[in-house]
Image 1: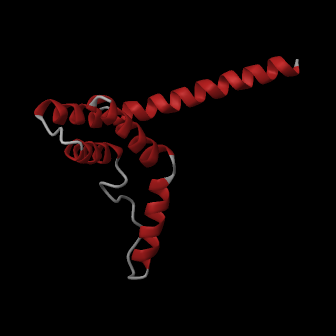
Image 2: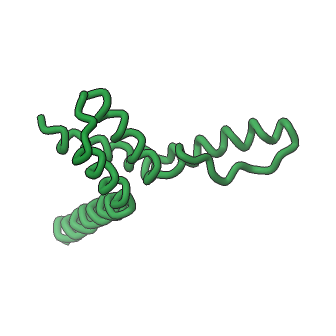
Length: 112
């Protein structure tokens, strides 16, 4: 499989985990409970783990190193993927909402 396809898949998985799965809220909750023991307020951000742009960048770089394809074109592709991580998140949400709308329409059509 091409390194570019692999990196796109890595970016998709990272965006799903960081932005859509609830991992970020869970991680911030754990961190807030931990810091509360020492008298600090809630943790609102824990970069790079709560930032999809940061995580896509670092995970794609690590993947390219792991696959022994750490070249300038691959690094620039990693940068592009991280720059478009918010767009990828919104695309996932759009697809999910479109499928839900289709299913609701089909349910109304079946019940009618």
